[in-house]
Length: 211
Figure 1: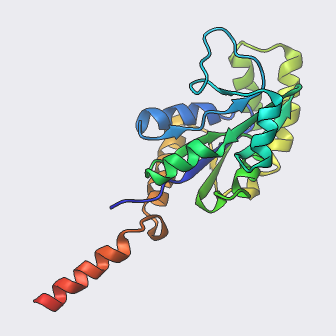
Figure 2 (figure 1 turned 90 degrees about the vertical axis):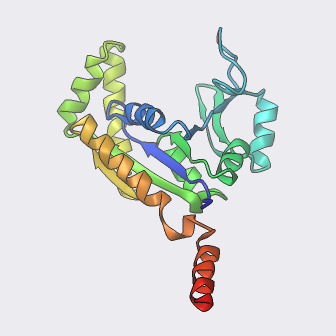
């Protein structure tokens, strides 16, 4: 039976595992659509329009925001970033789910958007702050100053945990992923996400009448 696609929002403080969980979901279910962000920054070598980002100038981006064409957006270091509405709606109508890897502010905007009724949100917590810092340092990518900044920001991120539909503690990646899959499967099976159920039950009743 056909179903309407849902919007799956993943958020977490940096280092808690949001991007890892997103990648594993995409590997588990290739039908998932990943929301390609729009940006006003210049393309980097090798980046393609519509593949890595939707590239717009500032005027075009503002026009999309004004017309309701962005589900969420923010300004970062002088450039705008956001999630275009059009590709997400097309995926939903085709019965495909769309995955968003966003912070709490982006998640809040998506939930408050015109498509918010189809959104489910999952917040991923670290097992401890000490483990969060250990994971950030284990990447070997950032200076002590950058890590300190990420740790400071994580406190604000974590303070928004109660705004989410589901909260997972990522102590063990495999166990956390299994719980995340269970959430996705259960949400897909909700009655209101299966618009053909009413017609199916009517057909069952006709079979009773024809016996």
